Length: 253
Ligand SMILES: C[S@@+](CC[C@H](N)C(=O)[O-])C[C@H]1O[C@@H](n2cnc3c(N)ncnc32)[C@H](O)[C@@H]1O
Image 1: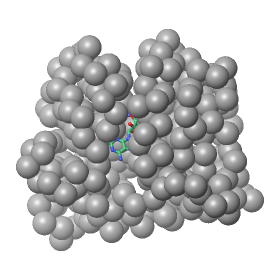
Image 2 (image 1 turned 135 degrees about the vertical axis):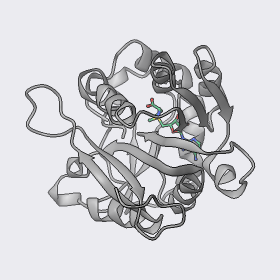
Image 3 (image 1 turned 180 degrees about the horizontal axis):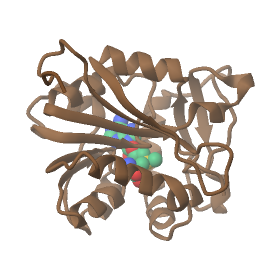
């Protein structure tokens, strides 16, 4: 089984950037999660994604809890494992996701869960009100255009709020295709349980740096979780804070 953007979420690495894409990849991406909701929920809850159990779950939990948040926004919460784990540690969590089936699955555990897509969240200040101490995106920033979402997340953070993002490590793309672009995840490692392939957008490190900076944030901490004994990181995990001079930025720390 391979690791997440899912390389944590098994990836077939076929780049599709050069091929004609039949329909809007963003729409297919969002729709795929409803089609695959049952298989995904089973894979996560049965511990079928090795990199999650052996590296990335603990890493993102540690990254969030070390900030000692009272209130967390779980962005693209999926079936809710992270929200449930944080609630078990006394943190109040609101999770949202475009997939109705995944939001329903998340509702089987503690936390508040809302069916909502990123575009609506970014457009409407009144849906899910802040302030949050942390907004966390665990393998859930999969689209090409994420600037609007990041801006809306920053607007919902308290003055000392942080954004925590875990994503596929850009190096995993390999030297020959180290570039931004759409790829397609076919979930081959799951023996046909997933009905729909998932388009997802890969970013280089410079590209991540650009979108974070454009949202008025600065990297505070960068981590590269890896499985025991592995020479290669399975993910890039970063914590970002408002940059100096940004509205709502903290004073000297
Ligand atoms: C790889 S899963 C990760 C789920 C969860 N964060 C976790 O750690 O298991 C990606 C999630 O992002 C959600 N997602 C992707 N694009 C979205 C969008 N535009 N609006 C809302 N949710 C979206 C999907 O529905 C899916 O649940």
